[in-house]
Image 1 (cartoon, helix red, strand yellow):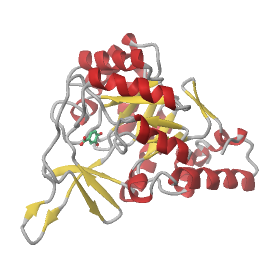
Image 2 (image 1 turned 120 degrees about the vertical axis):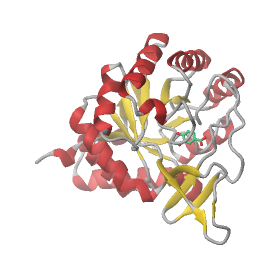
Image 3 (image 1 turned 135 degrees about the vertical axis):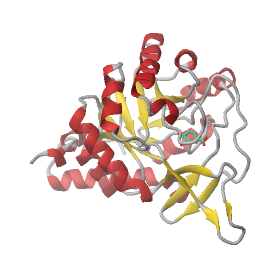
Image 4 (image 1 turned 120 degrees about the horizontal axis):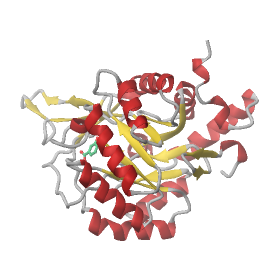
Length: 306
Ligand code: DHB
């Protein structure tokens, strides 16, 4: 759907609509990214990539639970050198902004990976400072505002493209972390990554996932994510990208009323396929029309009016 009402400018990037593919769900290949763009996504975020290749954890890496998935893949990725080929190919076939999710074990590593991603064609990077279970990266950085701020500063000085920072709900005060990220130069905040979780097989009395602990995503975390977006909107001026359990247009509207300028969809694609984008976009457009809004931007943060 190409519609003026749905257009969003986020940190200088033009999206034809506010829906995005969330990181981690569809990997790296140009072909799979293209399938969600054909489904209607306004932008795509790749799975997280680091400086060196990683094989990830032993199986099982995903388990379905009530209202969601728990996953612990362990950041399997081909490393940025290998991945630059996929970025170039994706840029050739995609007509929407391509955002590369980046992780590292130090601020220097984040910056080095971000620099290579941008050189290969990334339109922006999303810093993963919120993976819930890999040691010495992800949330171990995102839970310490000063350490996270140093990562943001290093990346900002290494690249000229927008820097999004994806935050974890596994903190005492997510708005405080968001504020530190914005002060360090973040152009947008993505909220939220998965919630630390686990599942146990009652017959074998053993944790199901190879890594035991993982991250819960999907409808189970939606109310947590909406609250996080609401809290962050009260504290920072930078745009917020809502993420966590969005499966319908009503969910997208709820996140935008809480303060999100765009929304990412992940788990719903695993459960419903890439067509979820077109149903969210159509429903959102019909809602805006029915309520008399000329632009989707007019509903961002409306739930904060007292
Ligand atoms: C993985 C899981 C995450 O929630 C994340 O942010 C990054 C990576 C993983 O298990 O690969």
